[in-house]
Length: 133
Image (cartoon, rainbow, N blue to C red):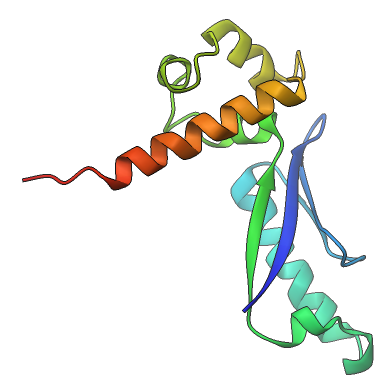
């Protein structure tokens, strides 16, 4: 199955998204869920209004979308699941700094982005080992 990479970012007023390497696939919305829906609609419109020879091969077959978030979008989208206190315990980054990233007041350095991503992946790997009785 082919994959389409879609990047979601937080703009001044809306969330925005675009498909990497497929010009013309864009979306926006007031929430991450809305921008995801808009991307799916954009793909459907793209396929519906272009001739077969103008449609990229990836869209002609079954595909899955891999969502890439900027830190601000991620923190805002998952704020109902991960509190800043929980994220501080998982990542080792203090809550105030995470709040700055979530609000867009500050942008994290590449090393901080990697620390957040690695910590979250490790947390999820640890959760896979949990078995309840």
